[in-house]
Length: 345
Image 1: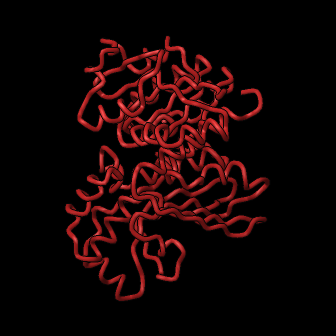
Image 2: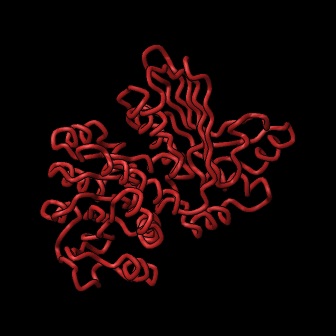
């Protein structure tokens, strides 16, 4: 019999709805290969929270949300209860946090993550806000309670940048890391080269569910900066905040600039850079002209990529074509399975 992982979903947008799809389509494989099954016992969206220890049906819950339903309409709705309140009392093993990014307060994700970790409940994050605002604190809480904390979905969706950096670059010194971390901005710039107006390209990104709930995070460079901060803290070995990143987005880029770059066999991309500087790194996010032969210049449309220069592993290059929220949800599933198949967990 598979082990039942009782799970709370904080946020029921594209990512956690896609996670519900994975529970529909991959349940048999998860049971047979990993001896795991996930029971959804708590849910939260912007209207409130609900709990059902017998478990919400993943298909019905997904369809309910896709048809415009809100948690406050569920029979199991708990009035005057926040996600943090829910997780202060809910009996569960795992929280999947995919609520919208808030860089001012981090809520509701930060409060929910704190509440869960304090009680020894493992947390898998797709929401970057809690890590950007409280990376060290959350890791201390996890260490103190013995809870798992995983977040590979926060950087480039299913591309395992965090896992590569933390697991696979043992004893390496990273001299430079560069990446295209925001597929929305990449898509918009390419569409503009093809003559599509900026506003129309952004609307298409939102329609596809790729753009952040607040699209200014994408186009003004803050989503990319968030990911760079998470990378810096997780495997570059520095305590970085957004204040340490010089950030410029794509909103000032004109079609004329894009066409000029094309005429000169170049392309303009929104590039994140961590450049080694002594014992630290210079962190920047900016539109950058790249020769067409450059690896990152080859990241087209919805693709994201990273290039890591090291002293002992050489230069490593990875990219992914991610056209929906499903791969990000798959990264959350990957993190969850890894957490609960470790010895002693």
